[in-house]
Image (cartoon, rainbow over the protein chains, first blue to last red):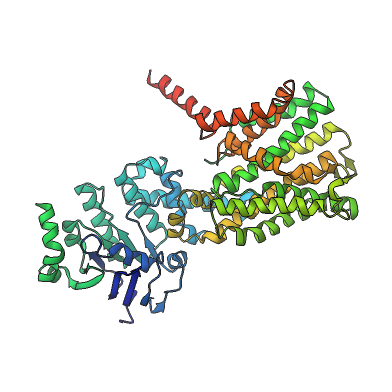
Length: 260
Length: 317
């Protein structure tokens, strides 16, 4: 474990009944870098993301966030400590507008008391206005500001993905976990998302992306972790991993075959 | 959907304010006053059930809690109204929090059972305590609303106090729904996973919404006690639980303005069906079944959507 890492996984394991979904996973993530977690379907990528973000408990090993063991922390506590995520199946607030969804993302930074709301104190109106402006800015950042007042549940799938990224960014994370963010996005939209993630990493954010879109991954990820049957079979710089025979056999060959 | 003090709602409240000009009949004003009290109760229920999506059936108990707190303090201890009101609201908030904390650890059917049991236990306990709580006889002699030297002795004065309470309840709920509190409540209904992903502690958020909704139910109870000046356990029984749920469903789950209208309509419905003695439950039940089957989003949201479609078509043509 590296002490300067923002996130450290040491021998993390998880089984469902007798099936090992994740086994002895170890890696460190550092600030200001983009990482990719790849592997064939059923490799345990989403399970690992769920373990890191606190939605699923691990059976063994330890997870440290900036040196602090977070195994017993709830998912919401991890968010308060700077960890945000998106989901393979988007988890938006479908009846709320896109703008309100992002405003919810500021939850851990909002200090509205019931008294200030009911009495209509200036502090309440000032905060609401500021939240709207910041949420609108984040919608512009992900390129969907035209849909600010549309119900999130009625947006096309690709826009929902981008909205979920905006909502995750509203939590002001230092570690951003994205589960298949390119699903439903056009090539141009995926390229925009890639540029945004690179911009965020230059500002110091650590990004971990689970994704099957290899051109996207190879275009932005500085390091790649490859999972197969729940185990890390390779990790390192992108160019090293893509030429690793085990990775080609377990996954990249499959991707290329699928692409062909 | 968030509530606004829109022109239709404003017109509705103005019409209700003008009602005593049309009829000075104590009977009509009692019916209208009770309709407004039930509108507050239904809107409080809607906050937890519709806005936050939690299957809670404890509203009759909190309605009774507010009424009994008011009745006991004012008849047994001679507390003035200005003191019984904050005590009744605080008591509702505290009991709401205490019930919510264990109850909201379960969800769906189990939450419905726990909260329903709480309501049943409340009426049973009150009925079994003839001393301070009056037992099945109830508590009579509750003083009317008073403020300073003024006292709402006649039915019209009482009606206007209830009207003011209904306006304040509606406006405050509209404000809450549009605030971060309202967004958090709606996030619980839409996606608990998504709520957690923005750092919302589900238990804390649910307890908060539950306790605030209990305050509105307690407020309705406070108004009821001073309006009717007599309460008994039967006023807070199973019939109230079912009636209020019907008001919320008919008005539209999560739609504060819709629930206000739904509550008023269902409160007044028995007045229109009383000529058909014995058939009221059939008319009532049939209407509910038809609405739930044909307009599952509620009558008011359905009317609003239809109006929008008509406006769009008119704009296109």
